[in-house]
Image (cartoon, rainbow, N blue to C red; front, top):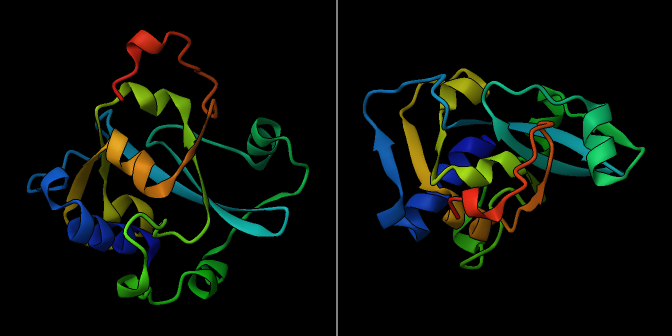
Length: 158
């Protein structure tokens, strides 16, 4: 199962009241996020950034303090994220099964919109999750990845 579909299934199972399907997708809107997949020090990691932001391996390496960062390719993703056995997860276990890094700028958003078309080109409706619940679910490590750090905690939506 693709990581975005695993996340959507898990969120529907454990957080049904905080998850909403988007009937009319507004891909490209400011609250859409992308998932990027890297290998850091030999371990797969998931990075969550705003849809319009680019992130290089050098930028991620600098942000997390590691010199061994590689972008994962599609064949590697299929091997790392085979069909997920969501029923065997603990209630708050990370559905990605790996470390998650979240761009600090996303803390200003009350909700995140995930769109299958943006991740894997697959058809499917977008879905929303509150930023707070997503961070709790994935135990994401929040870092300034986009180059636009949010300095004032008062601006945070979570």
